[in-house]
Amino acid sequence: MESVAAGRSTLSEAARRRMLSVPGEPMFYARWDRAVFVHYGADAATLQRDVPFELDLRDGRAFVSIVAFTLSRMRPRIGEKLSEWLLKPIATHEFLNVRTYVRHQGEPGIFFLAEWLPNRLSVFLGPRSFGLPYRSGRVRYEHSPDGSILCGSVAAKEGSLRYEGKIRNSSFQPCEIGSETEFMLERYTAFTQQRQRRRLFRIWHEPWRQAPAEIEVTEDSILRSTGAWYRTAEVISANYSPGAEVWMGRPNRISG
Image (cartoon, rainbow, N blue to C red; front, side, top):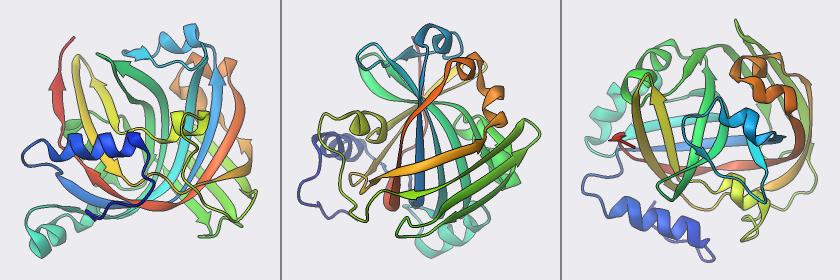
């Protein structure tokens, strides 16, 4: 996984250097498979009231994205087969992330408004270890590798989500440098807050190979539970990626 792909974006290059500059990183390896991204524009002032970090705006606009993907084969970097076996109960399952774009002390990243997953052990561990806002839900995805079928549903006590669609073409390419798509997809730091404890963890992967997608969200009541931003939201775009190999860093406490 340390091979460097030609044409890597400067954001990915910087994230890789930063990750490898810290002794003991990365903490985990994994794959994020068959990822659907649906992007919403939202009123910045309304969204900021629900986010404890400064929003990272683009041309004065705020964004929230839902990301539906499957985590697979998460395993510690150290320990090889034994460590991988011990982590197997939480190594592979579906995720629905609802995230927005923030900046802390000049560093861009994401902040999770909520995350739903079907693995109850992960739901227990995530908030305690990384400060992640995990919630239990029934998650079902049918994402074909080539993007010709993209369907998903999430059901939880907070509401439900359903969508369907497909990619616009069959050519998967890295995001255009400087584009709005790069702004939303190429993020390498996650900021979290649980009660008053703030943390961050960093990730690295090759630039997303993605294609624009036509996604119709037919039910999104689950999003109402993530804040008042939902009342101002409108879908602006969507993307699909077959997936990426990912390095995941350890959680670090931050202040300020």
